Length: 301
Image (tube, rainbow, N blue to C red):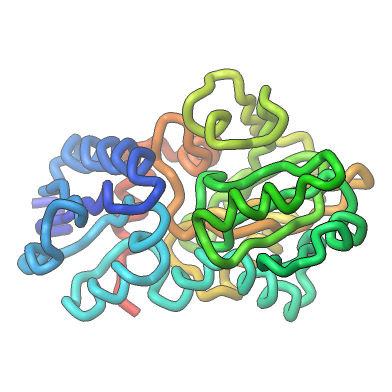
């Protein structure tokens, strides 16, 4: 009756972000059903992908590996099931912080200075080159999992060891400390920018999901001209990786007011703490309408 047919809401999965995905997916499922859409839960951790046969569309609320890295997208392509969000290539690129930065640099978009680390890196030289503080990140994780802030000289090696538990590819990234912001994207529209002010020292997992004292400011405090410029650049950054449907581009501001693009998220969170629903509300789109719009944009490569 809804025109969408039978819809699978994919959530859960086996990544380190499983708990967040369960929260996102449960809310998406309720919002779809509340609009009369024939939506069903589907957890790839407990159900074989072959059981997706017979579904007409898939709403991907999986986060992290095997959910937003191109793998589930490839499976859905083979099954000819339209799905939400970006295609195989863009999903794989968006999940890879290192290669996303390479692409943006080639297009002359600003990114923070960074170094790709391995176990044989000269950690003291990296600390000196990037300066402190700096952030150490697994290349293929999200939700701030495995990230450390390095403030004390001589502690980069320990931060690398922590991140390397999650991924053999690890980035050290210059700390840009003038503020953290995000731009949600729906279709061809960049949503109002949100400024994130965590009560913790930085926007870590606790600040993202478990605390209620993180401030998300919209309007973000930038001038209209500056916000318009950055929103347009965020759309460009999203399109450069091949993004489609919806997503989120994060950026940092330094103390001089220069912005630096940080990363792209091709399957943003949909929890009650998530940023895209907040930005959508500021643009006049409530949660059920946002979920419906994302589903309308479902496609195949």
